[in-house]
Image (cartoon, rainbow, N blue to C red; front, side, top):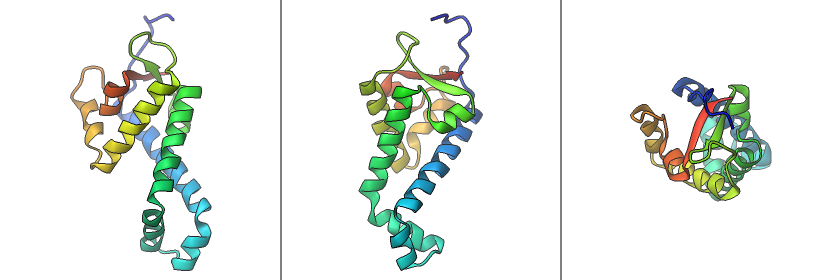
Length: 142
């Protein structure tokens, strides 16, 4: 791989990709649990109550989404739209399934603890979040 043209993705692009992915996953979750949501009411509090009741399913869906797309495509839908991708830190190539799964687990942990792991991107030269550091990945412009 030609490493001369690699450029780190901006934090702005990464944040936009995150928002797109979060909306997509939320839409899928709402569609999956629509019957339960309708039974409890369609206001935001009711939707959140249903999501909390099915928290393990929500976490599993997020894990599968992140792991599969990063491993198979090198990017989630949000990253594809914002034209960024995830590569292996050591060889600048495609990430393995294990690396993608590890990155996904630590991304979920970061989300659960007030997005603490995401803050790392603002203070490291390589713009790596906690899940990037643990998974040994970089996010670059596609």
